Image: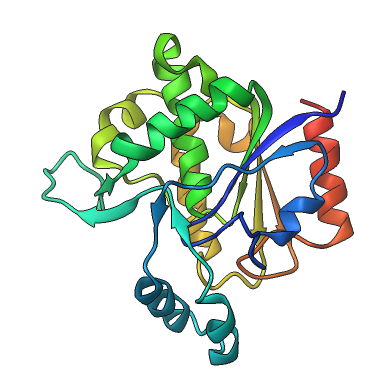
Length: 233
């Protein structure tokens, strides 16, 4: 049987209809599942994001009319000295996203691999950490491997700081990053390694760069590498 793979989209992406940033994920191997975040991103927020990162106006004019979704909205919070810099409240995660994905994974899982893109990469790490830290409550999120694509930084959820600090991932992972990704620079993306057990920086996580920007890998070599990785889980 082909591996069962769930793909978690990024902030402001859509899977119904599939947007151009996410299209490449359809080329991944396996029995693919694409849940859609329960929170709507406003057209104004989406356009502001695109302009900040230099998206051409003609592209914005087309894609801004699509619906866009997210897994949470990151809001500043008051933090104490023990919190990492930039800690934020992941608004909507506990109220909407976690119940939705608990049901989705329970009905459609288990999954051999979780692929997370951008905000979805943070989500994949958070769900898998919850599965390790609280297996009785979150066993549905247990997986054989994580593939993190275009990761922006470490998970900065103020609600889960204690769990993230005390539970380090021991899940084999493939980290994919575009060589021209200006949305999520590689040096910031590597912050996500802080969520792994110490030796995981060398043994558990494989970093692979692919030609492209902040979107799914599209080259045959990277797709072949993903196929080899997921089939080896």
